[in-house]
Length: 330
Image 1 (cartoon, rainbow, N blue to C red):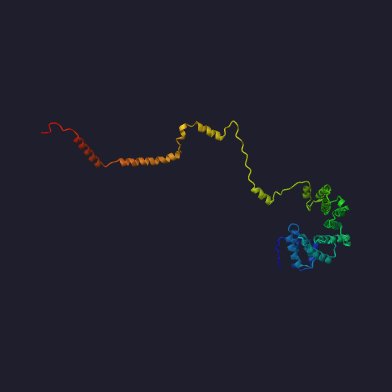
Image 2 (image 1 turned 180 degrees about the vertical axis):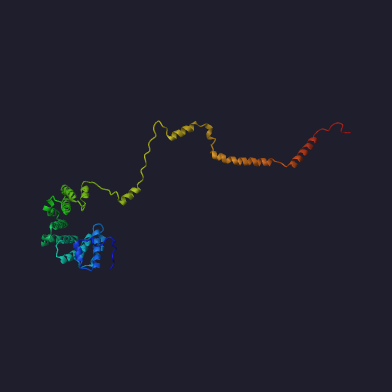
């Protein structure tokens, strides 16, 4: 049998005392295992019903003869919409205990299976008289829902009109009853009255069991946006970033472009023909010029022997060009 992981801090002692007494018929180790799975069902039923359903199935395989286990399995099946399965578990638990407390939810399973007429018939059975006040209110809401399923919207409104609805005392079921009545009024087009009863439901809804505040906002035309919605954040991320506003320059302070144009007008006309080189560039060109001068000086230096020969040759040429002196004939 496949077991599901259970946190170490879940001991099984968290379950109700009456359920613990039922588990005493089991071996100690088995009882602890079943109790821990039932605790997980209770923890996950509202927020993660699919996970709760899996833990309930484990507990059911371990102890199917325990009424509390069958009841827990029924509520887990009911939470995930497995109404036929839930009804079977509720019937089994009722046979084991003889208790009628599950009668309203059994009738609602009939509605979930598409049989509202059976649910309405159950509302008239003697078992309803055995229910406490809370159970009778639940049965009345199931009957009203069955009326609406059968297309009898006005009859649903009348079904919910009761002393419990008119009472000003706040009970655990008050918010849900007022909410059901407001929803029935809205279904027959009595919008103003519906808004009034949604407000009354919100006033009594101390545990946040209904969405009366959302229904009121819907009637008032108010639309809420979830600030933590990932899709909304993704849409916002795709939007262009708004440009920051830059202050315009004051009238008495010229803009940067105007200053640059004014400086350009003040330069000499021939300045445009003489491009100004950066100082670093001039410094870089200075060294090659010095090297070039040195090379030229080296090229001018001549050999002394060649210089003397050239001088003698020049003198002889000069002499050859002079007229001969008198008296040299002798």
